Image (cartoon, rainbow, N blue to C red):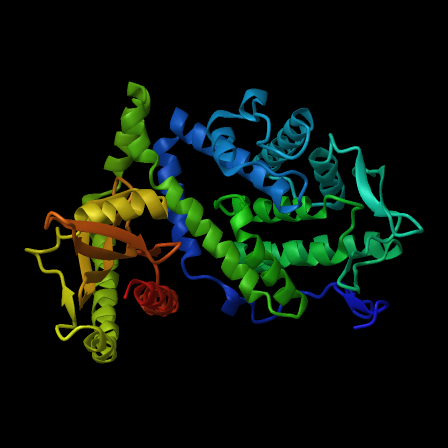
Length: 493
């Protein structure tokens, strides 16, 4: 490409485009289930310190990561966790923990947290989105940022005063690898933002699902790029507004999600919004898994008697019959997935046994499935995998089963797909969490067991999901898991 070539993020002939008429096909089947279960959980925990602290941690994590994504600063991972858990204090940002002055970073973090809390208030007041509110939001997010980067006539990066809470006055077209990425020009920003807000209101009236609308609003706003700087932070705040208004979690895109996030935005630039919707859905599942530990935390932290009594009453009000119906439905999903997993793994037994026989004359592969007498097998490994690798509380009391692909050569290994409850009390959702367990004899003939994760996300499914949608979601997830597991096996042979 020549150095003068332009890549049009915002299309001059059409401007931003409305959502596709087939938006119903883009919806994620699990989002409604997450909304319902999270609403029930919030109702049980209403007024508790634990719920307030969970919400506070969410806002801190959002504040930290939204700035890291924009390269405003860097913060070490260990320090990041401390800041999330204990708050934005200077003593936690020790020398070397960040690449910018500590006071500057703290001001940015507090501004960003305050801005998200302002979004919470905006939703509570039932305000409708407007261009004036978007300007307010921008001003809040960049309150302590006085300058932004620009290029002078010689191409040198210089700092120029940042316009806060108003549209850009000059084009902000970045150049990457000799290509100029062109957004909406300043003279058309006001009209395009009016169109954006009008389309958003129409989508709410039509019932566009929140994960679809959040992705659409985020992407179309990013195409306009109406502000001189801070557009990414505003994008994620607006997407969070849509999700939280629907009873979901704020959109927390972490540094680990950045590559997938940028790839999804690039796909949306080319007309495919689905990868961005899928990412937003994945991030909702991530926060849902964290939220499932909240009731357990109440026990550990010792909630006050009044809070416990309120939670007890809300739990009792959900009839036994209703709970049993939820259990039957989600257990039916589990049995379907177990059967599918057995069938799928059995197709791999022959090829894998051929591989193992080339390594050892005793090589073999076979599939096993839990029974009522063996369902407790792998319990310690399941808990280790959940706590140390997948960040959720494993409940093996409500439901437990497993399917394993067993492999024998000089070593012994099992690829285990474990299905069990998530969080407490039982919420009508189960999780399938895979892991490899390698068993080796040490020098003293003692068996040493090692758990190796093969997924960065457990598969969560819900009692109120359509029966047909769960296997479809599962197969896509399972295929990714198997690709990782086979690569792990190759490295272990």
